[in-house]
Image 1 (cartoon, rainbow, N blue to C red):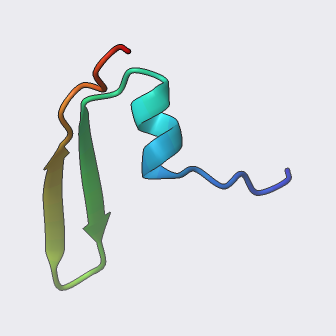
Image 2: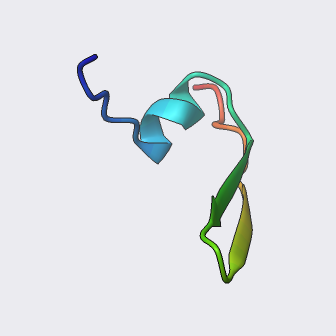
Amino acid sequence: MREQKITLGGLRGAGVIELLVYCSDYKTIIRVMIAMKPKRQS
């Protein structure tokens, strides 16, 4: 399977306004919520 690059700009362009990033190992858990303002229509 080929890796796919995903950018915040690409997500925003697709209409995504919230992103939850979850990373964990055996000792810690990190969760980050990123909220983006919807793109204004010209």
